[in-house]
Length: 202
Image 1: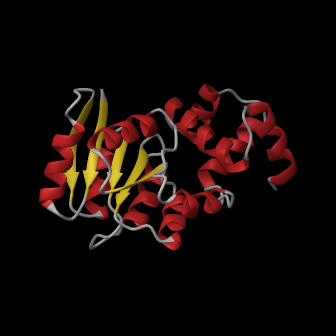
Image 2: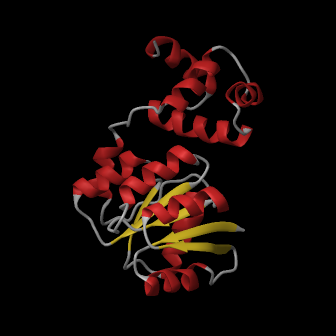
């Protein structure tokens, strides 16, 4: 079962999305939030697999919320669901750590498929915004302080369990960090990541 939190400032949209996502029985909407700040609190308590995130919201917008969720709970992935297709918003969402980007007029089956893809670690992009999103994908965001710590310990030859113990975090969180690090620096395995770290980390 894929556990999902839906974030949108319109209650009717949240309820509609919950019904759409639950239709096939393998996705469960465990909570809904009206803004990014509420979402961050819910994610901390619920530990969902995926957050379906609107971009335009009061209090804390979707870009800021995506960044906060990914930093606080890196094993939770974010699927942006919005009506915006402009290059700047797409770029900012990607740089904040969004895994996928879909538009609100997507077919219900396509949206469920996107949630499954995000949960599996893939990056589903609506074809209509791919031309805006793909150029941004070539510009890696800066590694977070925690990611740099994990990468440094990989370079020292520590296993995931040892890294988790050293940093006081869960082993699955280490794995999530490594997946993000591999994507950001463009490598496929920890050996390559270790070599990259020795060349680029101070």
